Length: 181
Length: 192
Image 1 (cartoon, chains in turn purple, red):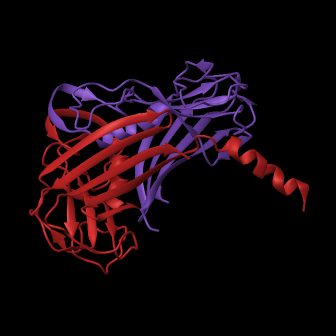
Image 2 (tube, helix red, strand yellow):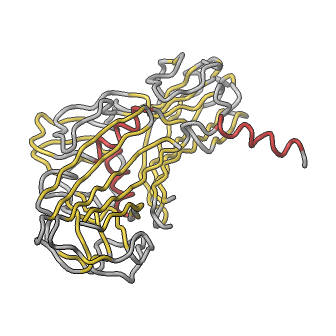
């Protein structure tokens, strides 16, 4: 039946020279769920000084990690063994390609030679309000910075670990799609 | 049967763990002897608002939205023949009488489940007639915003989801005006 549920699903695509794969899901964590209902139950009020949330520059990013053995669990708040190197470029877009489909797309690129090693996990980080707020709360505060929203990992069977080809860029596109289910 | 064909299926529950978030709405109605529970139908502007709220970057000034007092409500409607479509923005034949009381609550009953609960009550004698549709209205941002947009004051009482006789969700009922009419709308976010 139309619209009985909304399904929030993600797809991740990775390009690094000959390494190229697409995973048609990711693993969301608990603090993402909490943030969603926080944002849906904002009330309002005076917001001073100006506040930064979600995808303000410096509050969201993509991260790489080297762990290959720990599956994702709902209470996870960071990658298990994260590489701190930020992407050289990061951008996002909202799309509404058809009725009943709305999408957030985030693209990150590390330039050739910027980062190296073997990758076993990927993370999408967002400026989240990770603690459950009251219904009608006044969002007069900054969100967290670069909190884990979802993860992809070898240990979950999502992809096979790969060694970064440092002679070419590494690009990741993370697409979160909202549809009726 | 080809053995290889079922290996991926065995792996599926593992691979798909936490892979989706499912947002569902359950509605419960009490009015004297009338009591039922049903699932709702979200509309397109509910989807769009979710994406908008996840991609706000900046907020400043005095701003109201979503469930600020006067920005959300529940509504009753008479229509019993028009099913819900994604593009619906109002009940088809809405009764404008507001509930006498309205309140909401956020909860996190278990890891992997978070819930918004909204309860509306019309006192005995406040509203009458036949009811064929119910609507949850929210202070939504109905137009798709750009990634990183600046938060502002939202619209007021815009349709987020609907329940109707025409969708087979419940059977049209006549309000018993001698007792209160209470509706509880529970929106649950879970992993799927």
